[in-house]
Image (cartoon, rainbow, N blue to C red; front, side, top):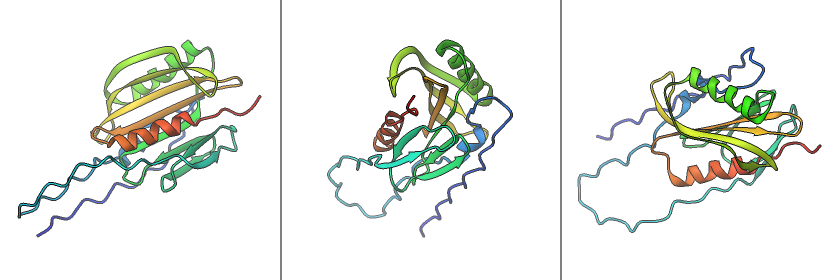
Length: 201
């Protein structure tokens, strides 16, 4: 008898608090699930030749009408918009990325505030490393922090938090994945984040 597979948890409502910038709540990551393991066969079968994971390209353009930023994302990903905050969830529900308004101020001050707010919202926060002013996104110097954290459902996640120091304002980007997310999904996330453009001056 084939065991029933659990249905993915519905994506929670996007909470927008009174803070002057948007920090992803642990509630929004409750939709993330680990990839379903293949069901074991009772009869031996030859192992198939390993194949490269199918690449998913970010080819659908999007513009946030509130802040004017743009990015591209793969067709089939779920897009949710709440004012200046935009979130994407992949079809397998193993990855979530959000774009929104970041804290104001210098790169150092704004990124410290953003990263601190993430530490307060997630438990077992484990920062692998923090890079200051070493990457450029949309022509803007940015600061990134990657690591692992646990959401309110007790799920252990990988995260990537980026503060983009824009010309007119700062932008906060956060990506969360299940620990065993496939390389193709991670590549799609990198492509989405890399396609981000701040509005023209």
